[in-house]
Amino acid sequence: MAFSKIGKFFGVSSEEDELLDSEEYVDDQELDGEAEFPHNSIDRDKVVSIKSGINSAKSDIVLYEPRVYSDAKDVAQNLLNNKAVIINFNRMDDTSARRIVDFITGTVYALNGEIQRIGDRIFLATPPKFVTNGKISELVEKKDNLS
Image (cartoon, rainbow, N blue to C red; front, side, top):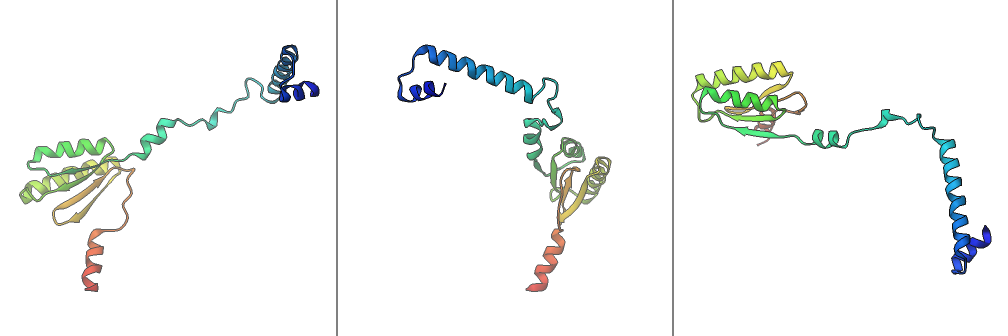
């Protein structure tokens, strides 16, 4: 067997030697494989779907500027689809804006999400998987104190 490997290296081995070596190699692999891994001992607890990692990494933020109360349904639908929503109420009157904020607050509460005021008449509503750190009003106050 050692001579046949040397012969292969120098290119002088016969076809018969190559066939015998490959049969021995296959037999060795079959025996080793059966001894190490029995057929029913595969550990399937460590299998992870590739798609689950891709989808969890992708998050959307939707910018919305409602003009009538019925637009609140679209904002709520985005929250139900696990998308964060920034809502700008600059083009609405105060009473309709308050009604929409109340509606969105109820939606966020039902989802265990969060709603925050991030500006004058601008709100951020997030579903439960989003995490926000800090508050913009605190940053603006700190900036005003520095100047």
